[in-house]
Length: 115
Ligand code: 5GP
Ligand code: ZN
Image 1 (cartoon, helix red, strand yellow):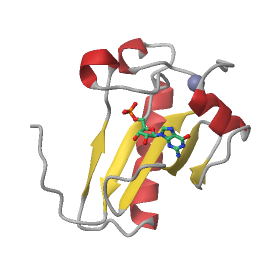
Image 2: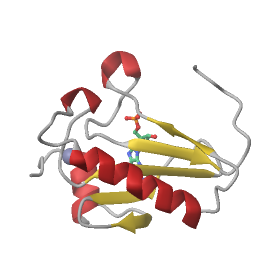
Image 3: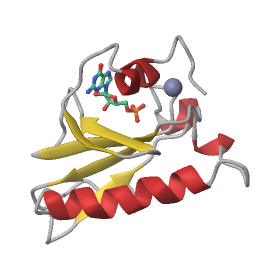
Image 4: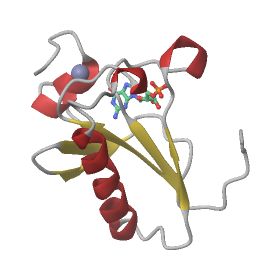
């Protein structure tokens, strides 16, 4: 199910170009247009789920698939010393694109820690 007005649905469909790094039946991953670290990749479920708050027992398998993909992508990108996975949820969480996505940030020793 796609949302016609959703930026990331358009990227998944190929209507908007992106630097794709991974794709399978459930997951699409591409480089962030405004990278915050040497490696900055966005991992998204192909199904339009607007935010983490919309995850439920019907669609949560997509989230598991995202994290399976994250482990594969991290290996492919050589992030053997570690990395950070970030999800911003909703207005107070700083989410700007309302299609669930996980940021993979890495390629250097990260300093800023929220927690
Ligand atoms: P959020 O702030 O919602 O957690 O993350 C949205 C991310 O999407 C930002 O890091 C932003 O740089 C990225 N982004 C926004 N528009 C585009 C785009 O058109 N292409 C790509 N590759 N990334 C985008
Ligand atoms: Zn979408």
